[in-house]
Structures are given as structure tokens and as C-alpha cells.
Image (tube, rainbow, N blue to C red; front, side, top):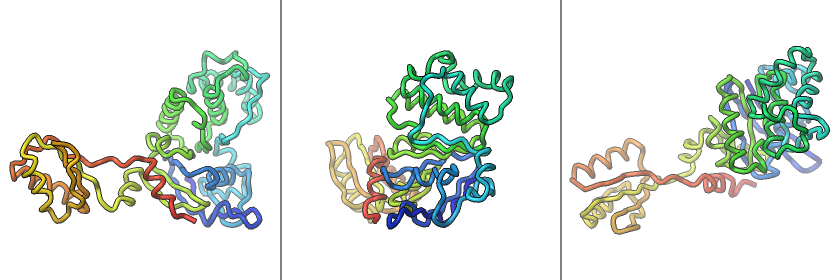
Length: 308
């Protein structure tokens, strides 16, 4: 559905995007994460036909975004990181204005606008002036605006930026509903945990380069040289400690509490299963045998450290 090929954007001697390549399948929620200034908004602006690349191109449903921008705009709904709203309009009037701009018939708009407001949980604000809405409500109203022409693809540049926790949850739930409707969603953020729960796959961009891609778990596995396993035993702690110290794939074994042992494990998932079976065969009184979850912010810092 979206294919980015060697996309490059330079501003004088500064390179905002550097040979970016990425493919996003139809119906996918794909997150782009990176620090401020990494190239996220530049990428999104090119896909939205608002900015011309220096070289390379991108295709949406096989259409070159640089060659046929009018057609591309029929396919996409674009929400920039800094958006404008018309404060003197009511929420319903705001959507009606954009519907008219897309050439939607007045009777069709009359039926469509209440549905969109319902989708973004703003049905009760139809006759409320935009300037009196909270930031989260304005964000959701702008999302409804992106949907006014029923686009196949949504390009959302940091839609949860500046929202309080409740508003973030509301935005996440709306995106899940849009995914269930078959929309392809490209969404960006500079906060990795913000995207991890709502995206099928992620791409990490730094200094205009895509430095990692895949699911959160796949990226996590790429980064960790060793898994960290945590074992809790009911009794016989010294015997359990000796057992794990004798395992060739276990490293950096340490006692963390009177009942807990932690160690690095440089084997595969299958070898981890074998280790647990052997521990049980030795009649070790194991209460729990778990893998430590890596902090998502640590993953992000590990990916981007050293990218120049």
C-alpha cells in the first residue's frame, strides 16, 4: 500500500532524510518513532504531497506521490503535528466546511458528520465552538476531519502529542476501531511506549535513516545479546544456585533476594525450554521461571545511540 524508495531530502548541506526505504502493507498500523528532528515529519509531509523530495520517491497504492498529488490526496487523510482549527466555527460546522471542500454533497454531509463525531466521541460537542474544546477534543476533531472523505490511508504525525493519559487512551481506542474498519494507518511519535500498544510494526528513524524495523518484540530480540531470566524457588536455594552456575549457557548469575536468582542466558527459546525441563527433572522447587522485560525506553536509547 505504501512503498518508500531511496527517499532523500536535503536543505542545503543538511540532510533531513537519507536514502529511506520502507514498505507498509495494506491494513497495517505502522508506527514511526524517533527523537525530534529525526525526519519523521519530513517523511510524512512528502507522503502527504506537501513537500518534494530531493531524490527518491514514494508510492501509495502504486501511484507516485510526486507525479500525481491530486490522486494521492483522495487516498489519504493527513493530520500534521501542528494543525489549525477555526475557532469561530462549531465542531459540526468545522467538519461541514471540510466536507464541502472535498465536494461532498450537502445531504451526504448532513448524514456523515454525526457519524464521524460519534466515532471520535464528540457527538455531544457538535454545537460547541472549537475554541472552547480541550486539546484532546481538538485532536479528535482533527482526526474526524481527516476521515471526512473516507480515505484508505491515515497519516498521523504525533496525534497524541501533549495529551493527558485519559486522552491518550481515547485516541488509542479510536485508532483500534479505525484499524478494524480496514484503514491503513501510519503514525509517528517520539515516545516508543506510546506506539507499542497500538501498532502492528514499528520503524525507528534517527538522523533521517531507518535504523530498526519490526515488532517491538522483534526489535527487542535484535538488541539483547543475552536474555535475562529470573527464577524464584520455594526452598533449597543453594542447590538451585549451583545448578544454574553449572549451565554453560547461563552467565552473570547473581542472587537478588533470598529466593530469587537472575542470570543472562545466551541460548535460543528452545534451549530455554530445555533448561527449565532439566531444572524440574532435578526436583528443584521452582515457583516461577520468567524472562525479564526490557524497558521500551531502554530499547529506543540502545537503537539510536551511536547513529551519526
